[in-house]
Image (cartoon, rainbow over all chains, first blue to last red; front, side):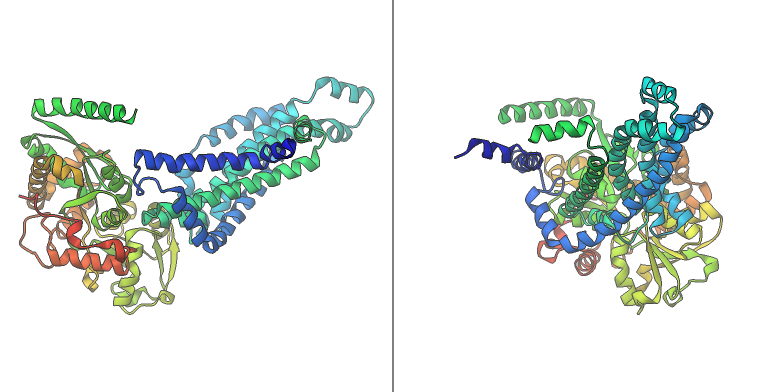
Length: 265
Length: 328
């Protein structure tokens, strides 16, 4: 019996959240039993898991549509968000004009205007991509602006005193120092993009997890609804993990990554 | 521990009940199925005229966000009475929600497929080649296949787009769809209000697809704990519908006074008149409002089992879901 092997498995980064999920599921089932919560208000975890298994082919197919819309929106958000953030970070004029407007627009509830996207762009995938884009855009801009603005002044002065070109300064100092913050924004943004895609599907769609949710809702099929929500969360987790992976490859030197290796070593 | 919580809850509910009885007027919430529109005008008329007050009821009319949520709120005791789609309630009840209909207001189905009159869709064959907007999962989208079957239409004869309630309207208004599935007194009026163009609805009921629609629902426990309240409420509600049928003008005025944003006088009046036309089913043309015929309910159940996603094994009989016993 080797206690360190045992504890290493139980407390490894992968097992821990699964343990917590298991515990929450047990608590959920217990809460339903103890407080006698009727199934038309909250389904039991077992019923949800059963639906998840039974409807898996359909859920998988529909989740593809949602994933496409999410990735499309997320990609657009990166393509527009990062250049815009650069402009804001490097130009006070742009910042003073654009930033307040950006914050203003962010406060508009997307759910309220989502029906208009269908009017403007029809019933295809485009309104979903736009809804995902709008939710994903803001965190990327804010995080990127913060990242570039918090580059150490001394480092910049040092580089300039050594006659580094602007491009060199950007590539060797500013960008590496801003990346951790940018990735923080990307991680928030990718999970929001999933929400945006579903909002888009809710208002007008023949496919996707949002469509499944709508049908389940109409039939009081709470287990199916929760199963669809579970699939949705998985999409979020997988995309988050994807961004995390890219982050590890691009900034393996950063504190947040180093400490992770240290803990599991 | 749980015993103590239970006792506390009991004590609290008793505290809540005593002053209500003491004043002789019970505060009662009627949760509607949707934001206020012409169909709800009779309740505002009844409140304004004091019908509910005379029955010792202090009525608070709350707007809803869909029949499904209204049914769940009534089942959970959040609202005392609900005005909701009875087929939707039946589906929830078959899944265990302890609710029952104590009166059915609309006994002929308001479901229809409609478009602007200038699209010239007057009969089912005209739907061929058109684009129809539906809301997936809602009651109309589930009964729609039956309408198609009865009228010898195939899904391939037309194109279908899906969206939520607002998208459906937007799609027709903006020409992305030619037709939508809606209620004669609801969407038809909203389309007219938005565009000032006449709308032509093809009613499902005219092609042999009839099922009951909105009604008053309560928690089953209330029938045991306070049957008197249910009787008084239904007495006042019946008077309200009767008076609105006689005097639709006054009903719309009362509604617009209480909820100024709920419509435009002229079209709301048309909507209410279309609603009043649905107060009786085919098998009981002379009954007072809310009293539904057994045959009508049985047919509704049958349609729900065949097309409406109601599970046959847990469906039971129509009598499990409605009663006329609390009507005047």
